[in-house]
Length: 401
Ligand SMILES: *Cc1c(COP(=O)(O)O)cnc(C)c1O
Image 1: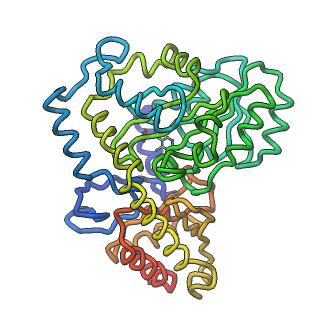
Image 2: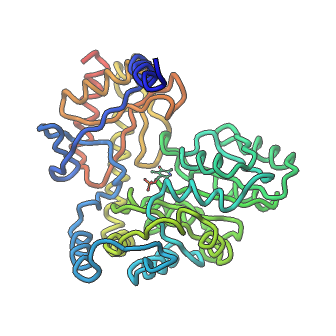
């Protein structure tokens, strides 16, 4: 036996615990449909909440950008990779979220994993919601600051932990919309705690940006904490591969904090800049999201959410009630249906799949043991009839298929 043989054992252990993940090769098949292994499936598993990933305006922008800039960026933004497109995007993002300055990154995971260590280090303290996204957790670990985890949304516990903390630099980390639960953090209360305890707050709005707030300006704008209402203690982070339909992420906030992140974030300095073609796609996406079409897409998305919730509400279907399935409270396009154990969650996913529907089962360690769930993600690309089809298939599955 060598160390190499361990990998077989460890993979077998994961297999036995229903924890093996498989990728499927997909191709778009129109609307929210995907061609998967030769079969067309109606997908409820994309975070493309506004249905913009295949939008003609974004495609056209990419074609024009390729003609102007070529494909690759060639270098770090600190060397020669900061294209005119990327610079314009940063200005437009800052204006859109009504914060002084923005910095555009290649990917959301790398953004959080590297801005947290740029902000705090050994001897400092991080306060992290128990349901935060993996990349905030990994950023916290990389920073080597002390990590104080508080129970999900327990702001009294957070207040007490901040009060008891002797470290001088304190950083609160929170998702704005929790990615596997769909609920929204109490951002005004988090800001108040940051102000009271001389702390900073990093808000990850991966799932709210484009969807929440006026014109989809995001979770901070939704509670009036941008523009004149902005706090000097908030760093706003959002991703651009979800409702914005492209890829990447940005941080925005006060001038000096963003300048510090530009200077001190290693994944920014030591990574090749995002290609200009992505920035141009994002600028086109921004125009759609902020315009009348964006409002129409958000209104349609809300109608889809309401339709799904009506269909799965307690009392709407005896079999769903009897199965003990629980749709978590959520006003966002993330609509988790908690099934419980891993094996039944996978069985329901399979039944839906047999019916031509693709809804992912999310299992531990992504969620707590015993709360395996179907994470239903709605998109403006869905129709009301698509949602009706999903509700009918779930009701059948609750009757045992
Ligand atoms: C998806 C996601 C990220 C990662 O963003 P990518 O651009 O996909 O790397 C970060 N935070 C949250 C909350 C997310 O859901």
